[in-house]
Length: 495
Image (cartoon, rainbow, N blue to C red; front, side):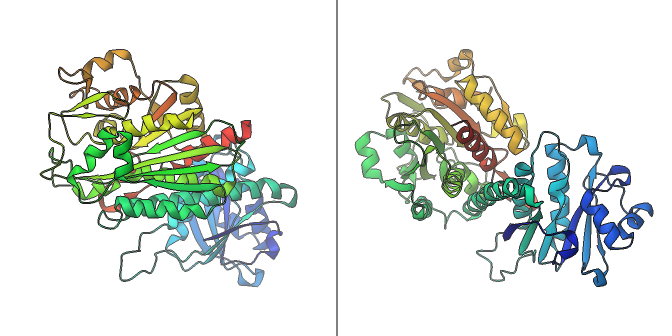
């Protein structure tokens, strides 16, 4: 999709369709009023006869007046003018994008950046248009014989006055980078496990080395064994696919400034190991690498936006399958930190990958470490598919992530990480068990990781409920790419 900023007056615009906003009770936005004049009262006539009330999420697509040079109009309801929030604005954008999705329209001029959104500037609104429209047209066709996409959309122009061009262009740059990062994350998530193996994930990471300030290194199993990553390597023992530790190093900041370290679980397929999962729904376990895919997407976005930060991405990647050499319940492994772990459930393998990676992260002298993982079904039970779970050992870091999530409309909900929960991880045979029983599964998983994050500021995102959709519309969502990109943008602006 091609996105650009358009500053020409409405009467000179050339496109298949113009999208304008209508507030509730028939109040027209400036672009809608201008189009009403151009089309001899057509917009007001549509509103007055009740075809559109302006309620948020409503759309009407109409043929306009070819003699005015306007083939089609999409009128998008924005709701009450004084109640347009970030969430309802994105809802209106999504409705507009879906209203065009299965039409023959190829080029669109979107005038919705002029809408008055509480607490939002033109940069943010422009970025949201790109993100939402791009998300609406994403379709996985790579492995289909017939690859024709549902949407014909090719060009989206976003209107802004000449005096606002710089602000809009900034939002466009951010939006294109984040949209491309989400596309990469979704594509990797949607690929099946027989294609997207740990080796394939590593190959895709190496492709990101095309950016000047981004270098990529892949640690093989022999190197990890020499380091002492017994916990991580125990997960791959049941697979014929070798484990990989992907290391991405983006140096956009000052040479000696401490980096942000992002860690993403890259389990390309999870059958549960010896603690085998039920067959129903097991196909969706290809999405267990969405944390790792997010890291690749965010590092790509940071490089494309040329953020003045240093960012390290770490992706421990493996499969978790049953085999004669696989982990068994009751096995004890030694982590890179030297701490021993009794494996009571082989399906709690993500934390075995992450704990060694957290220890490995110390060598980068990080300012903060943020890990993300489709870690626990308990998070889905507790929070559903709306927010990602957030836990951490530093209030400032967690508050910064919450603030970024609100701006990005990629929400999180913080859960407690109290010392009392650590009692549930006690083992009579090792330093800790890898599960804490039936209670508070999301929290005890984070408590386990916290034992390997004691030497730095750390936050954990459990994205088990938000990284993909299930059912007939199943597929990767690209979350939490917007949240983490916003967090990095906020840090770069402070810097």
